[in-house]
Figure 1: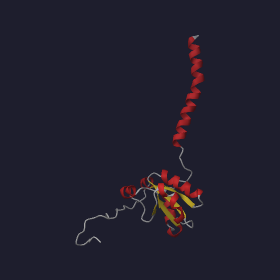
Figure 2 (figure 1 turned 180 degrees about the horizontal axis):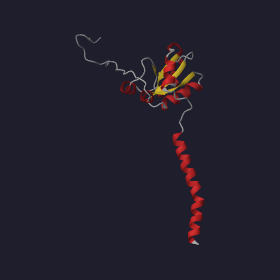
Figure 3 (figure 1 turned 45 degrees about the vertical axis):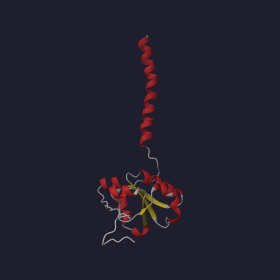
Figure 4 (figure 1 turned 90 degrees about the horizontal axis):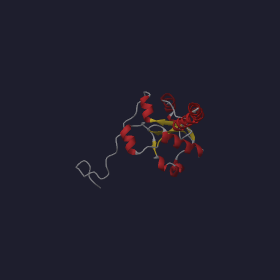
Length: 154
């Protein structure tokens, strides 16, 4: 009798346990944004018409210099994006950029909600892994560099 009770209990509990595990896995995989993550081919196609495109990199400067990026872009960190909307043009398709496309996806959603034409989001690491070439970006010289004969301080 005890074995039948244990088997019956296991049969009743098992579906709930499996359902909870499935829900947890699905919730982890669901992106926190709605924007389309562009493939390397899709992004390269958009780059062929630069006069119709605006690339907005939402990473910190150290991330851009550390990992690389694209040769022409507007740099607006994600935390500053909403306060920068007034000077972001609405007449071009926009692609947002971050390392793995998570921040870029959130930025794309914010811009879409404000009426911008967003083509999608790109992750530079995903782009490079898919065969794309990144531009290595050197940081500008420090403003407080010591004066030299070729670099006099003002």
